[in-house]
Length: 396
Image (cartoon, rainbow, N blue to C red; front, side, top):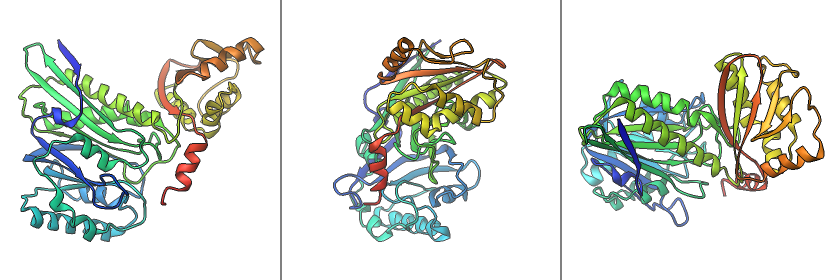
């Protein structure tokens, strides 16, 4: 019915948008200020953090009327503009007034998105002094993604083309940032998805919500949920092509791959692990147990040390307050049996096999609770010395 093809590069694959990034001086020698704009106003769908202390850019976004359209997003790193009160929201309006005056722009419901240190107001003079560096007709995805990176060690961008049965095509692309403060509630990150599909606004909302639940809401690096988590989907509708099932599949693929990039880049992480919980009483309990495993510091440090200590797995499941029974529990590391009612102690051979599994960069820990039929997978990484070093020195 449709064909999905991966494309090189990122946002530049999608018609109807312009984007770029510049150095405004907050990073030593990298972009820290960027933009995404469109010639015409476009629909925007968004998902935001569950943190009760939502940052000023999110509060600013939510002041607009429901189903508003926009033509500009301003991006910055190094300062989250979080816990800055109403003054932080007003600073955003000041920046957009200066941006409009500097570049003679017709801004319609402009949006800002920020990442960085919490607790400081934006330096609006320094930011606005860099507006005249913007090349508004630029289509430089690399410059844009670099403007939102903080502790990321590599850029995260993807693009796909979808060809429908009638021969028509649409494209979708995204940039994403995130490496620390990642928790499945949903994950700590910024993600901007652009498409030229002729997608109705109600489908944008529905399909983005579903995609987030099966991707960014399933990953964890350190169990911390930020104040600024944002996923946005914008459509120029330039292609005049659309199919709901095709768009759902490609959006789920895109967000799932990006979410796993976040885990891979987990501030010093060396392993990406799928935590599969099977046989749970219901989906809510499967999710709770899987996410508890992906968040557990004891599990993460055991993964870092390549120690097949199944006791940490069992203990975490029991502490998650799901229905479980030690005589029904079964734990596998890939295809190596770690625990069941007949194997409650590791012999040397199975321990050696499990240790070999844990040396791989990617593997699965599968836990069958044996009390129902619900399944869910969460994704996480190890936690080691580098994570501590990065976060101990984050403000320097």
